[in-house]
Amino acid sequence: MFESLKESLSKFTSGGVNKKAIKDLVKDLQRSLIQSDVNVKLVFELSKRIEEKALSDKVPSGLTKREYVVNIVYEELVQFLGKEKVEISTGKQRILMLGLFGSGKTTSSIKIAHFYKSKGFTVGVIGCDTWRPAALKQLQQSAKKSKIDVFGIEKEKNPVKIVKKGMNLFADKDVVIVDSAGRSALDSELSDELKKIDKVLNADEKFLVMSADIGQAAQSQAEEFNKLVGLSGVVVTKMDSSAKAGGILSACHVADVKIRFIGMGEKVDDLELYDPVRFVSRILGMGDLESLLEKAKEAMDPQDAMDLLQSGDMNFETFYAQLEAVNKMGSLQKIMDMLPFGNKMKIPKGSLEVQQDKMKEWKIIIDSMTKVEKKSPDLFKDSKRSRFERIAKGSGKSMDSVRELYANFKKTKKMFKQMKKLKGLGEGEMDEKKMQKLLSKFKGKF
Image (tube, rainbow, N blue to C red; front, side, top):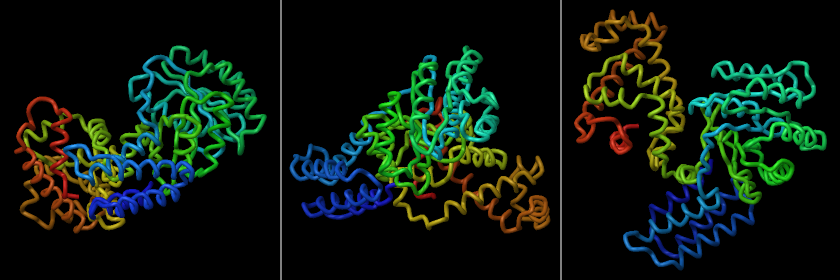
């Protein structure tokens, strides 16, 4: 997503700052945005404002010219991409999901249900896609893993009847989500169906689901659905793919519809509340430590992390827990994208994927150890071949893989001992400042 934007800004920050450098930056930004399917007219309006401010404004005290120009780019993009984060409602609500075929509407319905459930809400999903074969089965299957309640009537062709019965069944739920039918286009039949559902449901939220690869067609689609039912937001899917996404971003700007959620992967928890400030930080390569901290806290109990730091006593059981926590946080590439200027770290292409696979392999190897071995890593110091051979055979992995696991375990244990020495860590609960201090120790270790 917008890789060339990161490169343009990186090139600007590493060179001299003069009129030519600013104009070159603006041209690079124009090229990057247009290549990402952002509306051409909007691109030139945006780039004109950036250039005028960068060349004419007086630099505030305390900032260098380079820092000031970067800040202008940052603030203008935030304004363009949504200004501010929209908070979720804490009261009872009904959500209508809308979208055409292939947008990812059914998957997004379950992801949003999972999102609300993880926040402590009771949730029910009504499947009223009577058009697409096996739509209800797909919805039920997707909901099963997250234990989300789903209602639908297999052979019922009237979606309004399904919604009415589902609302009665889920009357006590905090959040009720309706997964409506789609078509290849917003025709009169679908329009009529959605109006009837909306009248019965009286939805508090109406989310249009669009794929990031839709391109310039996003604008007309957003405007048509908005005119039909009055959208309260857009859910963008496939943001983790090679899709350009600029079409949707500019469409929402023109149609004056806010992006509410973005889908960042295939897992049920690969969904984020859209925050333009964090989003712009990420696409410019400035990182998103706030999101990283939230993911870290969700993946591993903060007090458990502090206890580990306090003791500095790591064994293969705690190392395994770390691997589990990293896996819950998402791919290593996503984690790198959240680190400030993580894109500047010299990491060979594909190496993060290789490392992710190794981590899965290490978990299998640890599972093949005895309980005593897991708790007492010092047993491996004797480097007895028989021990490594038995574990390799039991896990179905090579001797080299077992030795590689042990080598990485020792490095990680050493690093945690160093972090224990950080002043202020290990005192009370892990607050954000302490977490940020902890994360700074990882700089350069990837």
